[in-house]
Length: 223
View 1: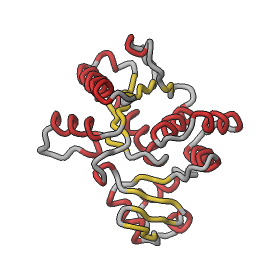
View 2: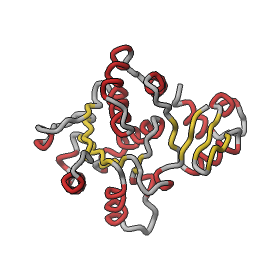
View 3: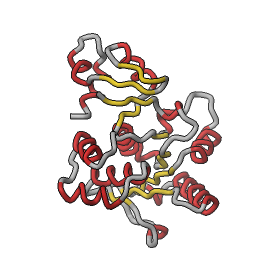
């Protein structure tokens, strides 16, 4: 049985905003989906922006409200004006709040920008799921010592491994879902705990003919 939470629109403070070049939408979407399955509420433009809204206003608002801002550093980062603007906004928040806000994530054939010379980053190029665990641990306040010790025993290679590793150090992961998926899972056997949390049996969902292929594919990500 697993917890489910609605997506970023459910809360005024999503866990993390993903800043990325428009050329890296595929990478940003993949990362966002994985993080949703690993107990992080993600703000991603493709999921949140509606027709007619002000792009600048909505993104600026989300960057202020999100607890952290992930900057995707790829080969396209230095070629995109928008990502540099979002970097400056993230840096401004860091200075104002006097805490870590900006989380640089290295993906693909990235050229490491100068501003990372004195900043610790997460490299997702070779150990993607290891980087995901480190990111989840930081945002949820899990000690680096616990995470390091757990990964010395077994490095994660998929989402299921991430769940088992987090459970081994006392953190119970959950899935963050959009409202439509949340409602469908409730319809097919999910048990509502409170307004925005529920549990469900993944095997039951996978074996029900009435469950959409979309939801089955989501559940399948855990195995």
